[in-house]
Amino acid sequence: MTARFKYGVPILLIGVVVVLLGVILFLVFQRGDEAVVETAVSGQTITITSPAFTQGSPIPALYTCDDQNISPELTWSGVPEEATSLVLIMDDPDAPVGTFVHWVVYNLPPDIDGLAAGVPADEQLANGGIQGVNGRRQTGYTGPCPPTGEHRYFFKIYALDTLLTLAPGANKAEVVAAMEGHILASGELMGTYSR
Image (cartoon, rainbow, N blue to C red; front, side):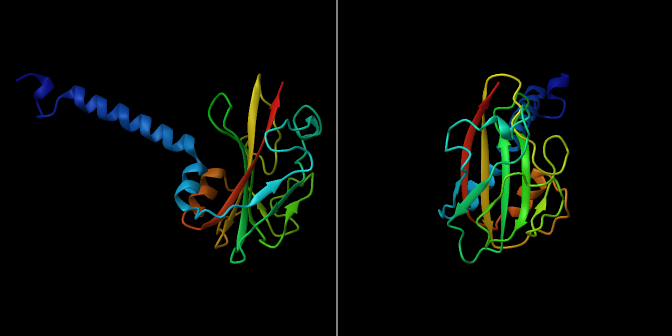
């Protein structure tokens, strides 16, 4: 009996299964919070806008690493009355090493309708919101800073039926996992930036 069939299962088949599992896990982790939204949102939409840029248009340099690197003003409407908290995530799916996280804020009160420009990099915000860590492992916002070419930046807002029991400084993966099964509505604003 050859080594290939020693245990009744061809080694080649085991190799194929391992590779497929690796690909599936890679795709799941690349999807990030999008998978949560697709399975949890019941169709309600929150409208999120910014006076600094419109949907699909360039984000001004003021809000990037090429200038002051401050967060842009954001406003939203359409939060369900039954919402208990809001989550805001900003990320760049066009980053060369996978989606780069620029901003994570959770437990925002549902009765606020936006954030002013230049949110400080404090773990606890004056409005009660809590900031997580970005892709640089720093608290708060870090603006667009693409190596080359045009990148898309998504500001995603989620209304939840609960407060997240996470300490300050949680990362996107922890926030997304805690949101699962609690999303009432969501919305997104996309801006671009290139260097």
